[in-house]
Length: 244
Image 1 (spheres, rainbow, N blue to C red):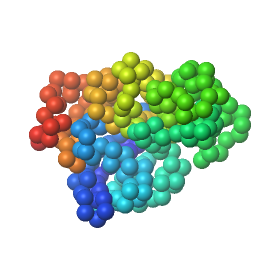
Image 2 (cartoon, one colour):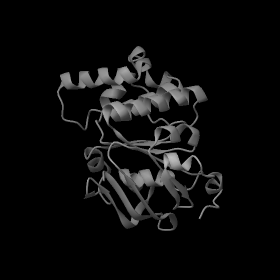
Image 3 (cartoon, one colour):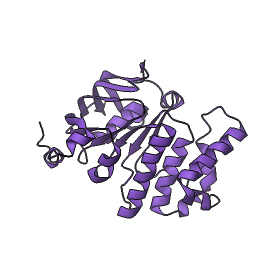
Image 4 (tube, rainbow, N blue to C red):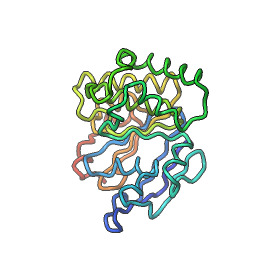
């Protein structure tokens, strides 16, 4: 198992219990989606895995997070990133005064690789996101929302992650652009073999590309299922906090 989250509790500011014993697994090569309403604890799971809870006065108070069998909870975010876990947070965080290509090269800073290898990786990225190649000399802050989303995903891929964490990639995007982004995410998984843990509210976009699904309600796993099985279930009640 590539990633195991075992009975994890997360506390913010020593007061707010955001996760109340969440367990989930992600097998290598799969896309696993976490669904749920705003405030359910979806993003907190990704922050716990990537180690950035510390930036928001949060911490894992119970349970453990294993990546390739090694404990990740309690480790420094930089160390976790060097372990080949890459997080793409919602909000499309970019170096907005740098060009597209410069943003992509930032993703190589934690790697050990020569210039030839980096150029080859850039060529691969541009195959998946040709629009970024067209705009590689453009300042990132002037891109459209969809292009910025493509760029943050592409920059994360430049780290060569074994596990890519995606937080609400469809947020704020027009439906057609969101579909394009999810199409490319599926291709990245299939062609590069990148394992993906995806947080998303839009089930119609995420279910078709996923193998397994967890539904989170009030900091708990309310439902776990294969993506195929969940298509026949009524999941709206879990979004409303009524799932058991």
